[in-house]
Length: 315
Image (cartoon, rainbow, N blue to C red; front, side, top):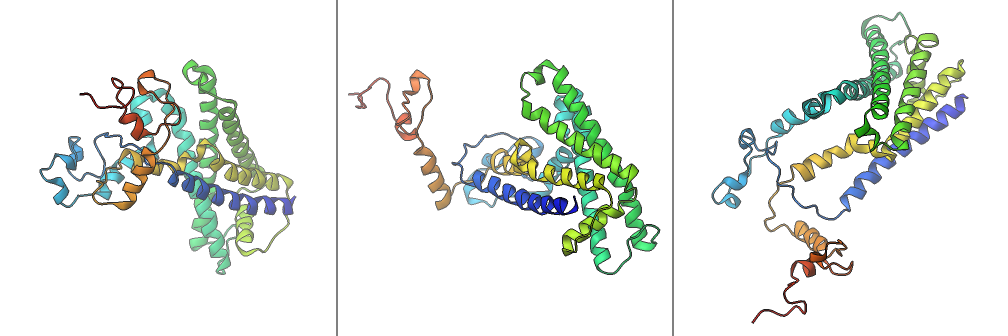
């Protein structure tokens, strides 16, 4: 199964990167969005404290905008790491959602440790169990971080699945895909936990696998369980950006381009072009007062006078 695991790993990495790129490009090709006008905007340096914006300023278009990256980080970091919004609006869901998401962050750090360990090994530093110095510290930290991430993710996936089954509000909006995604996570991390306990307690084999991926020096696995684990992990990696779980990176655009997108349109040819394209979109809303037929565009609908169906101006 060794060669299968390598083929799946390389294919999964290509699919993952390709899917992420395709998602971002698909978003970039979408029509210009309508500004939400939601306040506070996090990058407003001082006005965010009271929910204001630069439009409050007299002659705002003549002044330089103050954009605070620190202000954005103050909002984004608690939201990303701690799911602050879920805690504030749905505490009962937070108790199962937080372990799942934080477990994924821990596993991302675990992957980083494995890659760093593989790089140290490539540099000639022994990464075998019992090593001292930096290598020993890396092995010790990796041996803690990995199982913690597996357990948190497993607990969260199981909790979210039960929550969807038992909460009628969530159950009504849960598809087969939602349950399949959680089941795939649960199976993958459960197999990883069992492999860690029985086959690879210090992740020496996994670190060697990462090293062989980076150097193309393939090794044969002694354990079919380890190969199964790696196949599941990389299948999951390729699968994530193909589903709604792609929100883990697409949320950046939701926050920056839509929720906080308040850049003024002052002699911006690109923005004018995109607005023109959006206004040229056909409208097919069913509301009678819109008089949309799927052929009229937004300009025609907005300029339509229901009191003068023939389009003539009142005398």
